[in-house]
Length: 193
Ligand SMILES: [Ca+2]
Image (cartoon, rainbow, N blue to C red; front, side, top):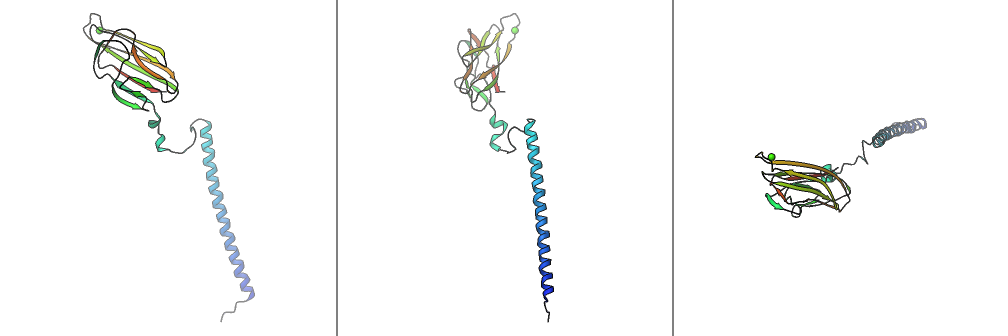
């Protein structure tokens, strides 16, 4: 029969203490390693923020992609128009990111404050002239004059780009400044910088 002596008991207790001490030390080391890794990542993110590589944080929000944040539209005429004045309604809408453009009125309403780049191309056929400008936030900007009354029997295509600052809710559209004819190939594109 095994006789457990006092000395043996002490040895077992000592052994158990040693084992748990080593385990605890290992756990502490693992924690420290993990902390080092987290610290490294944090300092990397802070460095990226400092140089502007990361804007706010590293969270990936699937609903906050650049396409979903973008404000941009593109549209063209649904039919040619001869001898008219007033707002030009580009009714055939190909893109309307941010839902700022209304194809039934031709009016763009800025969904947020910022700089907007407008480009519109007017096409006129022989003997015709178009006079258009960008009305942005109540200001008349960027005249686009297109004239095909010369001797060459072709059409003309005239483009104009204009950059404007619009506050959220301000409106912009293309309008005529004299009697105008526009071929249905005429179009507009706009994006927020
Ligand atoms: Ca011509």
